[in-house]
Image (cartoon, rainbow, N blue to C red):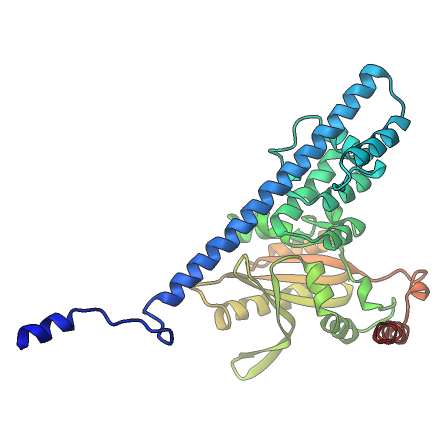
Length: 355
């Protein structure tokens, strides 16, 4: 009898439809992650081959034009014949074929192994329309691949000339965080384009702060990928006093808190002193030293004097940057629809859709 009980005790429990076996959730999670990863890999391979395919077509057209002396009209004829031969396939319009020529001209060597082949075709056409300069084009390609920008985000950064604004803010990163100085330089822009706030030239710091919080999604887009909003007028208790910093963010990729102070006038040494104080307090009282790297401070001011800022930055051991901001020029402000206009248009669209 005891032997029978011992045998039965070694038999694993049966799993019923209502019982989840140990570790099953982890198993399901891992397989779902692999399927999702495979889908991404397949999409990338297909996209890369598509871009390479378009490049090869463009190269063939360019070479034949050089050899045979074909004019521009041959592209329109090619488009018509290709669409007749492949009636179920899209992508061979006259306009598309001209883009393929442009692609092959812009990248004289095979693009399959280059970063541009990782971008969707719509992104590539935006870049071809926007730049003739290879270095500038490569900057936006790399940023898009690294940050996963959508087409609209790419267009936004092109229109606001990100390549001229990124990495030029005055800072002391080389001395305060030498190992990460280059990465942090690329994190800060100068100037920040705050057109979306709709503020005029005459506004208060509170109005600027309120506008940024009211449009925090747009502000996060302007700050760049990885920023997360923590709070406004964030309280810091030091001794018997309470201080409040303007805006506190956390950068998810760099694992750093980012303190942002706003000034509507020219950056002054005392502004950087206050920012350094806030940064040091966040480092000691908010940051998790086992998880987070040292806190970064950014002063965004209306104007700056480079020599004054450089001396001020040398007087602190906190990693700080000084940059400026721009609002929408006065001559363009009347062209913007008012919030009431946007509300009315939205209501009309919804009513038309419901009808």
